[in-house]
Amino acid sequence: MSIEIHEENYYVGFWSFELPERAGNFLACAWRLPNEPRTWHVQFRFRYYRDNQFFRSSDSKTWWEATLADKTQEELEASFGGVVNRIARQAGTIADFYAARCRGAELQEKLLTCPAPWMHAQEVPS
Image (tube, rainbow, N blue to C red; front, side, top):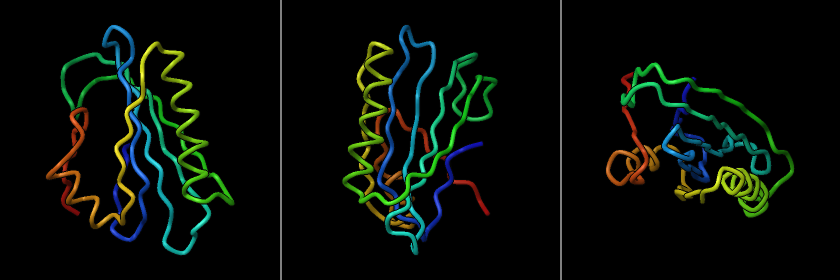
């Protein structure tokens, strides 16, 4: 599983933090479909390092997905962002937020030209 960017969807952003002693990391993304302005989809995972590869690695990854209904963007950022921040604090660290707040077409360009320092984006031909 991976986070896929679709041109027509609206993306709020990405949350990330390193796990203690560089054992792995956490990554999450939130988005909505064009015709569902108050229904948000979140996808998140924990990754535990086994090698130093970003793509096609043998790292262990555990993925989850959830849907948050009847929320404004501000409510989503506060509630889901708050959950991520609590998880990060439990892990003894601080979460970073990469604000997208744009459609997928614009986000694809942002990720390839100006990613967060912890982000490794890969363009995959369709």
